Image: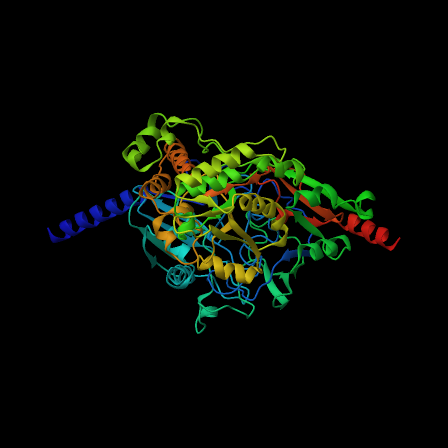
Length: 623
């Protein structure tokens, strides 16, 4: 009888375990609100050339400086290319979404998909039916550059360290993670507080995995000045802080022949030169000292590429069309400062900005006006709220502008003549409603204090569109100054929210999620170093952000995002600027790249040096 009972218990245990196993989805890729487009046995990403030749050196440039190889902390100016792109595109996005360069993650994205993650350091991903945890099983062949295996302990240590000592945005974006568990040498499990945050598995899979053995004994919160150990295709070969850094391709990279690595990272060396001035960087490119540049100044694209190398075909100008949401760029007003606490004042700042004149006279008509936080996307709001969107907003009606429910949001427009008297007059009316008045040609409050603020910039080229805006504000009697500082000082000031107004970029994807907590919520408004530059803190915004983060289908996501967009626009936190739907790339004609249009438009990680073109270029330069 005891034996029979024992056998029955064992059978019940085995049945329960089998039931649990069937309730777990085990795969090599995951996606949000969809399925991965590629099959489990895909040989390589369809937009790469698997036979791309390896070799050669490429020189790139960046305006700024660096004194730190740890991009995960507030202190210091981080070097470019450690975890993301070698080439930064307009809008703050990076080119190349296959893998990191020094540090890699468990999942990697596809340049042709919006919401998929394919196993990279991770061989398999497990998610139960109740979605209360995710488990990653690491590949046994994954190794750091010193030959040490990448382990589950490294993953758990990285997560805990970033939460405790990293930038505050890590804690904000991963607030729904309960804990992390090491379940074997190569298996790590993240448990969740709820199953509503659909994006968490993808976010956790995208964390750059750091080597615990390298950082132990170091103060993680201090800038790192020693070349780090990583698992990626490149290691730092040499550097001079603030001036240059050279990445060298690892011949022993464990993922070179994997589907997520094949055909990528083809250069033997990538050298990044740092310049303090964009004009000097341009001259270095023209002289052939820099091989490729992403041009983000429309005037330069229209007029600065008329030097002989372009006319002879030695330098190629090409526009890469992308299909990405452009997010929003604009002059962000710091509502922590009393001058911008009143939404009527912020609306007045919008009335003054003359985009049409700037686009015609400064930008050669190259841009479109941005009128949504989710521009170039189905998530952008339009018209007036109806249906399910209206239901989301209705409980907060008393806290929102009445016009939000009755009028489509519309930015002021001018005839591009430079004579925007109607807009200036409307701005002055709004300022009077907010308690400001004109006295002796100065805009003053009831105490006779003149309105005054400074527009903070980190790049001299931004002065060109900013100064005309400042001059219009000065016509209203406002004491406006424009201050340009170096990138290190700019980062320090913005991390501490020590500014009045600045030019802010909020990049967005097709499926916005946890990053919105860092952009727009009350928690991020108080967190040093967050992306919530305006200091946005509204209960309705917090609630709508959670609706977006927790949306379980595309319809619910679209509804919540449009409602959030509408509330942010009607709160006038930004003076929206402009956007473009292509990337302007100029390069010396020595490269090859896959001739296939991709969603991201431009992916430098798939390029290579073409030996025939390189030889022809050398001969032409000698002539």
